[in-house]
Amino acid sequence: MMRITYKGISMESIETDKLTQEQFESLRKQHYAKPSEKELINEIANLVSLNGKKMNNIEQYYFRELMDKTKVYYNKWTIEDCFNHKPLLDRFYSKTLKNPKVFNSSDLLSNIETGFRLGGKGVASKVANFPIDTVEQILRRFNINNNYYDMSCGWGARLVASLKNNVNYYGTDPNYLLVNKLCELVNDWKRITQTKPKADIRCQGSETFVSEWENQMGVCFTSPPYFYLEDYQIGNQSYKQETTYQQWKDNYLEPTIQNCHKYLINEGHLANNIKNFAEFELEEDTKEIAERNGFVFCGRFELENISRTKSNGEFNDGNENIMVFMKKGFEHLYNPYANAPEQLDLFDN
Image (cartoon, one colour):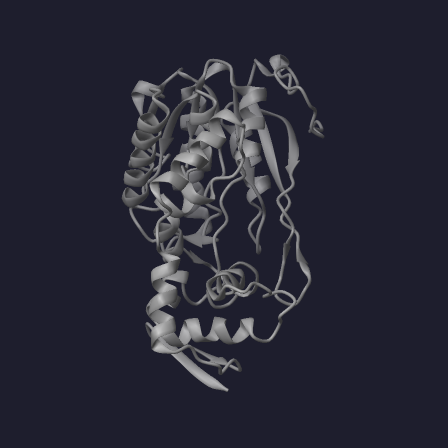
């Protein structure tokens, strides 16, 4: 048993195998190494010409450092902390030695990153990105005028889906480092593809109204912060340590929904990927606030995320719901299959 202490937080660990200092430095360098320009170009070309769905190189090139700064509520530290404090990375290294069926790569870094993804709960774990395919399904169904507003930009998946489908992207996010990276991605995309996609990304919270966007959007869709599920730590975030759930709903969720009502054209759709967690009824509360502010609930479908194996061999249930709303008085125009070659399981309220 060993005790790990970092940033005033401690834990006891039964994992006692240790990396050498040379291994530790090498792993940190490898983890934060950017893909080559060629790899980036090839991935963007695959997304555009071959209808690719993966953005692993894009994520690593632009967003890995920021994702690693994000702390999930049930963890003591972030992944960045693990690459800054050797005893934390030692713990993950030691854990990879105990279960060769799960940690079966010949590459040490790959096994440790698998540990973050599957077995980091309580210590540090990887935050998820959004599936590009799901964004494209939303756009195929609900893109009416080629103007899409993303209330919380996340790690670039919704932006990439817009770029590859030539949909005008409007986004807000209070993380100023993230906004810089998103804008960098847009500029690189234009240079690599020789196209001129429209992207207007504002460094602010979605609760702040943008008058230029009023009555301009055909669809508003995002996966918003789940209250304190993830602490992004940078910028004027909707959740801070002293924020109560009621304050978060009053000061962030409701004004965001009110702004979406103003931004949408009459035939437009509001879609939200949200899920209850802990004692917080985020789905029910989002629906109630939307209906109180001029929306009618039209239906929902299940987003089937990839089931992820935990380090003990069990599976996590990653399924979440996407709720769809329209402005009151225009709900009769709701047709989830109007622009879609395939169908999803939708059901009425």
